[in-house]
Amino acid sequence: MDESRDFMQWLGQDMSLKILMSLEDPSDLARASAVSSSWRQFVIAHGLCKKLCLRMFPEASSFAHVVEIKNMVEHGASGMDNSSEQACLETEHRVYAYLSKSLTTSTIENCISDAICASSTDNYPEESIKNTLEASDRVDHRASYWSSKGESNPAASETLIYKLASKLCLITEVHVHPFQAYFQFGFPIYSAKAVRFHMGHLKAPLEVESDNIDGPLDVQDLSDDNFIWSYSSPEFPMAQEDRLQKFKLPEPVFSIGGILKVELLGRVQTQEMDGLYYICITHVEVVGRPLSPVFDVGAIDETGRCMLTYNPGNICNLSHAKPLETRSSSRFHFRRFSESIRTWEQVILNTFRGAGRPLMVDDDDSDQE
View: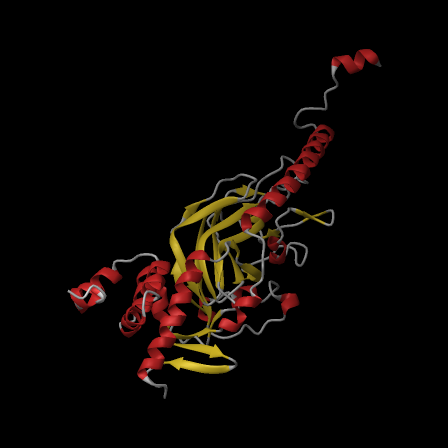
């Protein structure tokens, strides 16, 4: 028997396909395609990298075709392209192999890049949605939070819409921090009863000036007629607590389009001065893997179909953002310091207003005086 003969030839095409399709890690399939030129050709000819990517991330089926940019020249992989079938298969192999790798190994970070608009804002711009981009509830010695308008109906909901850091992101969690009004009597926390998340894309650019993005035109701009939501999460209960609350999605979501909507369902806290219900949020962050600038998507039609663009020349231009854990650690220490100061402020305020415990002086200190 010829010992140098490729064992895939002994197994035959069907059995070889069954074995390779049982691989679950894109890196394993990439290693298999690197064994020999015949193995590489087998993987490419049967589109195994694309099939594995679609199995792991079904949302990738939205890509009508892919384009690889090399030295500013586009190489397409589409039935309408003039390239040979082999060239198209090789392009798809490279694009989907790196896409799968990026979706499983790229750095996890906060995927929100900007705030677009809110369904309502009580005092604009002091209580703008832009404030929720900051992790702290104080910026430049002032309170930093978004506030809805007051409602007499506790079932009234609100929505916050954000632009993600990339049109392609793999999202695993969304974190929301309700705001505690440390400057109001009783220090109320204006959380929602529950929260739900939607991801999708714009039908067309919003024609709204950035300075007034969450001003009087909010309700019109937030109409679902302006968006296509390709994903909606389950409803998560929100605690009326002053902390960053973490909501883990049932499965990682491959978000295509770069838009997130946070739907705040129901109200729990009234404001003492007017008796109306409000929702106030300190901070929102999205945990995931943004894929730009290596990957991008072209125009997305109403059915969700789009073109995937792969630019390997941008791999060296990837931003070296700190992992989310590192940034969160530094924010944690700063927040602990801020909270210790605020605790004293609250005690003093309550003392003057006749609520809470007054400041106590140790007996030892009194004796010394």
